[in-house]
Image (cartoon, rainbow, N blue to C red; front, side, top):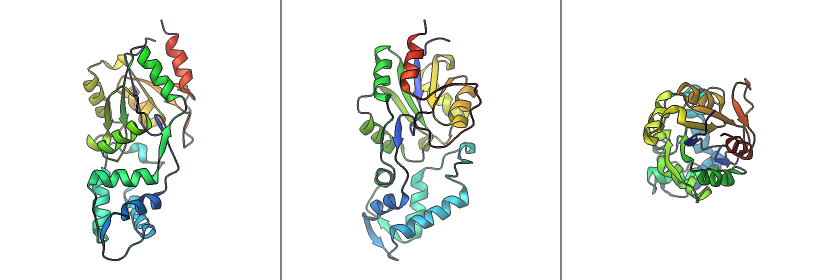
Length: 241
């Protein structure tokens, strides 16, 4: 095992631990910017319709989501959602994403990540972000800046901007192109086994399975470097000659 030149990170439950999702809170925050609500829909009614639409397309099914290799940007979904209900908003698509997300699922840095990023900086190990996420890239960058203001991420790839989702190898290849590195020079750290571990491995990148903020139980195959704290990974890297 050789020391990585760069570590790429997943976002959710890896860099940032998000609170339990509350779609009604997010929808209410967005409706506060309504300049027209033809049918006087409440946040509960709008979110119930959103949930129905999402079930139809299997968009957030935790048992199937990892099998989706193409991203549906939230701005497309929310545009249909609100306009089909006769609701007009004084928000841009990016603002819709930010307002909804901040209210529905605020986040904070995962335990120890700030210290670990400081360690990587001292070791001159480069960093970047590759996240399966439906929110627009500017919203993702804003969230990461707010949660981890002192970061050296060279790029932040939100799949909403690039069509492909992990585990599709093309999105990892995009990250390698941006980094101008070979696969065996890069590690990828994430919390989702199929998307992050299998996806990185299939792209020739060394995977690290971070379980410190895991939301769902996932099968442990025992064939991967898994950690429950960033301190563990720091110590592992520090001992590589």
